[in-house]
Image (cartoon, rainbow, N blue to C red):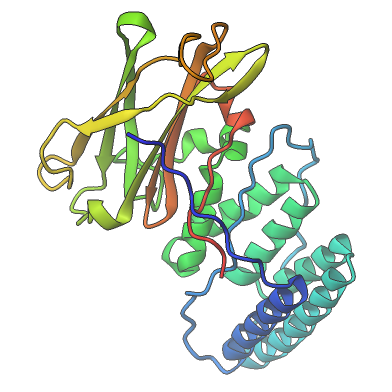
Length: 319
């Protein structure tokens, strides 16, 4: 299989515009609560990976105590106050004061708890401040909210399956009863490497689907398989041609929910070939499974490749 490379990202929109749009959306949602209209959370903020080679150690961040709201009047007043705090937070962020922006969002969260866009924004600010562990706490809150978080839960699950979550041990316990990440449609069950002749290797990848899922493999599934080599202490992506094939005629997970992908790696380009390096050696591999552009699961061998080349969480460029 030729290595799948993510598309080049579009030119990013200006930060001020992005922040302004985000705060308007959050304030609108808060105002909707004030008039007791049912909320449908389906507009997550842009997703950026939380992966870091060396996450900065942080002390767990204490949450503010929540205000008790007993009457519709209490809810209406709290909503207005929270909306104003969100507006002030956006101003702080535009001015480069992320800590001040975060403090205001925490006050808003204490007034109106369990607001998905507010929690997601707090997580993003923690990430910008290099406080990965505190960011993961917020993503965990969204994940634990289930359907109430809407599409923000997909964002949170993707974050929790990223390298930073796994390296911290957070992702180890979030497999559900079918063995997949909560909210995911596909997962890696096993990777088995077999050695061949002259440095060749064959990697067999068992990929499982969630029961009763209808999967459009041609349009919705992307499998990235990368092989890495080492020379003179430097680890790089192989220049060799990698090929692959499914061991069933149609990989649609329709019958038993399990498909096997066989990937052949021919070994490093030899010293006799153009651009070959006689000192180049096989180092390891990475497999990443995406469904509708979102990371579902990944495996690396050795584990250090997660630090060197963390997989993208989202293949879809931000609008």
